[in-house]
Image (spheres, rainbow over the protein chains, first blue to last red):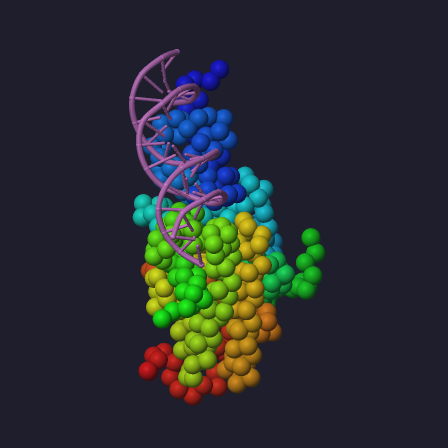
Amino acid sequence: MASQEERKADTRQRLLDAAAALFADRGIEAVSIDTVAEAADRTSGAVYAHFGNKEGLLNALLESLVNETAAVMEAELSIDGDRDDQLIALWHTFADPPPGPGRGWMLLEHELWLYANRHEPARAHLAARFDEARRLVAESMRAFEAEGHADLPGTPEEVAPLVLAMLVGLEMQHRLDPAAVPDETAALGLRAITGLGATSTRPASRKKTSR
Amino acid sequence: MASQEERKADTRQRLLDAAAALFADRGIEAVSIDTVAEAADRTSGAVYAHFGNKEGLLNALLESLVNETAAVMEAELSIDGDRDDQLIALWHTFADPPPGPGRGWMLLEHELWLYANRHEPARAHLAARFDEARRLVAESMRAFEAEGHADLPGTPEEVAPLVLAMLVGLEMQHRLDPAAVPDETAALGLRAITGLGATSTRPASRKKTSR
DNA sequence: GTCTATATAGTGATAGAC
DNA sequence: GTCTATCACTATATAGAC
């Protein structure tokens, strides 16, 4: 049997999950609190009890996601294997719909970004998210460089925002018109920033990735 | 005196301008048709007469903006002078609030991108906009290369989406936290992609741009 | 903590006068 | 073409029962 506290925590998570999926799918403003509640098999009263109002729900959602994206990126970057493959894998995390809740992980990111730009309290949460992402990328860049696989045009901390920008910017174009950004172009861009393939201490072939 | 046709065209433009400013400032979904009409000194009836409904207004707005952004980018890229300065100028067009309607040119862009991702008819308009932007950048890249100032990592058509991605992606991070993306970092990224400064047939100094 | 019911206000859209 | 008035619908938020 579930204790009251377990039920409370469960409801909270259900509401957050439902909100994330619906916001990504239809947009934040287009989704009513009632809709979120119903998707979580609760009523609007539950939302108000937990989060006060829609803004509270948004802030809670942003906070709960701070570590999630970081985990995804870290997973991609920590895979053993060719460094070049890692960058492509990272690109696919952005470009292709990963398992996640709905198909639209990045759509939710863009929704939240826009929201944070207009609601001061949310801004700090999202800024922290981006900071964490940059920190992780910088760490990987440092590792690449130490192994002699990368030839960075600057410090890892300078290059990190560039990598993030490239991924996000290409994803935006890719989503609108996939043909405009083939995988090869993404690889070209990421290599240009990281200097990967420039030093080239790699022994094997590179045109075709066997896997 | 204004003829009826002039008044009609004037109303249409006023409505589009008001919509652009309000959508950028508060978000598309948060702005009612009544609000748009009142900001243009008209009533909601005028909006319905001109555009049918809100979706019609959005499509008309997207269409009217197709050439506008292209004009801005073309202006930045056609300025005579150091090629390095041109890239920085282009970055400032994205990072700093240019004169435009409201201060939030890029916010409107993000609103429209998100909207186009959920409304098929609008998608084509926005895709055309991006295509045009890439075409312009590719043209400049070709010129840079011909002058021996750039050392592109790929064809101009391949590099164009990379430049656009870098600009947009850095702008997103910059808007959330300006300190995270100083001008020098942006310059670093753009140079890494364009190879500008690599071939270095340039005679003058580079650390400090005299102007 | 959660639900039901309700108060209050705002939305997109239409009809008809001018 | 534009405005006024009005439609049906949906939103957020609250009060009180359980």
